[in-house]
Length: 164
Image (cartoon, rainbow, N blue to C red; front, side, top):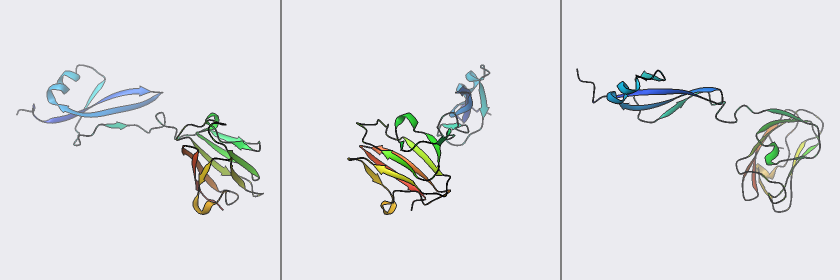
């Protein structure tokens, strides 16, 4: 039986930032035969023609955010502290300034969780900042409420979560 016209897949397994992943691509049997001479390739049957990464993603994205307890008031959203999970008591203000004053990269995110039943975490904007939130709410609803603050560009921010 001639297999040279069939499509097979192979995966090149590698490690990036201590995370193993496999890039799966379709190819002809002739390419697979050549690749099998190297131990880094694994032959697999695959039906799709779309290359895929096979991994849990933890080393490729910032899904596992460091946990930071905020003890100062106010807290300022900036590039220096983006990408973290913030646990805050009540009566903490998250200050949001124009990027000319406090730099922040487009796409920066801040996950905020309120631990205290006293007061509320408040989001306060400086002049020239747009903060988009449902019902124009600017604070968390109370203890055990959470929100994500995201910088979307041009001094504009989105706030989503359990707001009150």
